[in-house]
Image 1: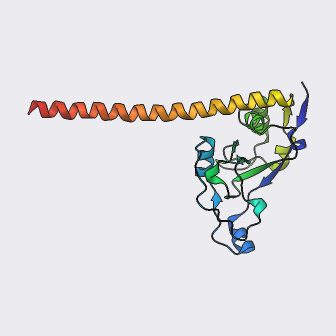
Image 2 (image 1 turned 90 degrees about the horizontal axis):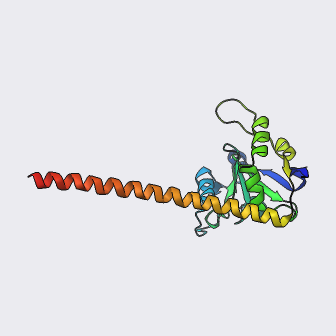
Image 3 (image 1 turned 45 degrees about the vertical axis):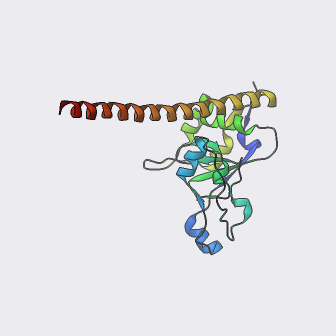
Length: 197
């Protein structure tokens, strides 16, 4: 199987520093893409675009629905959903720009998040002090990925994303069942107390 450097297929664009952005663009009304937004996208919670507050920020910095973004602290990638379109990634995130159509977005996400060989490479490249380690952009570009046909990439990527959606639904159902069980059992105790009186 052919392996190539990921930098041949994508460019990594670091998020902007909020302090510098305030000075550079003269705006405090920048709607930043944050960890909560990443988690909503990672759970595939689609929504609607409330308001795109971009101000004087160049449009190419703002995320669009369907863009791929990496959480630098979690070392996970996801696809930006409709509710987070228009937000600007801060330094905690890296936007992934695809150079051409030779790498499927969902296949990229599978490789980056779950493929054992890439996970191992990412672990070797982690840098920094303290609890949050990061991978420099130059190291990201050097990650080697297996190259398969576009048809196979699409199948693998689609299967991976569908499994993530299913996991998110199962987690939601699990929480609902837990709440339901707590409520029913709690009510049965209250009823028992009333019956004793």
